Length: 326
Image (cartoon, rainbow, N blue to C red; front, side, top):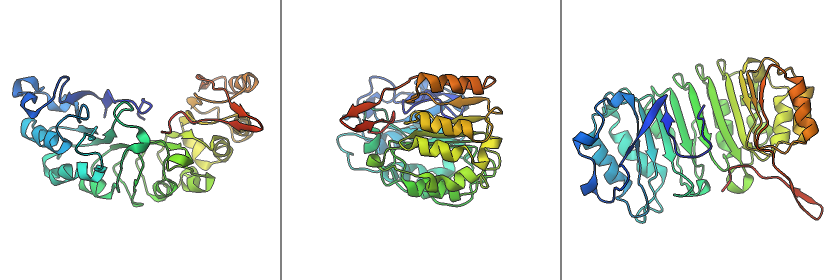
């Protein structure tokens, strides 16, 4: 599980992040020399990304990275911001093509994150993603994979025998991607995190799109399930309440979404949740009475009920908002 909510990663693959280029970089002439590069390459998660609109383009930065760093021992890599004033319309595929071309130079890569782009660089819904199939096929030994952004995102439904952790951070995860993930085989996956998001930003998954994930047949070792940032959180909670996969979970995460008393009541009326180590519901729309009911019903479970939200009302309409959308 990535313990961040669409902010810049400071830890990835269990390693602290080393940023290339460093602060103050403006031209390739400022690129760090060998003396500024850590010699213990395998002790860091390496992040390559443009600092701002006027930075050199990502392909030039990645080429400099390959010329400077011995990537053979590297185990964790982050592709950061690729958006500059010259590359506004470039997609993720344009940016990860050089990585695919250099795949033989990363024999030990096990953790890869694509699109570590912060809000002050680009809104999450504006990130131009791509079909991830070529990238995942170029690195079949990955055990951790994460991606931010969802426009034009594609996922191939097949077996992923090595993956242990999989994260999709988005303002709206396309339902076809959710279904493709559910139809894939993950014999070793322990952590699955989906930011389902808002239908206005490519999301809108319903219970039917989550059916194979909730069935759990393709996820025999799953221990953490995050169905986060969900505009349909009450309906999702009602489905989760009777989902076979829940019995094997240690952490159930329904945070960042629109969960209200209806969804929480469905959770309490469903299968027992007392086996969970943690139930994460932070950023919710629960009444104080319902919050207390949850705490009373789950005394041995860590229940995160922080960040309560207030509904917005406009005449007869009531509005709830997910935490991450645009």
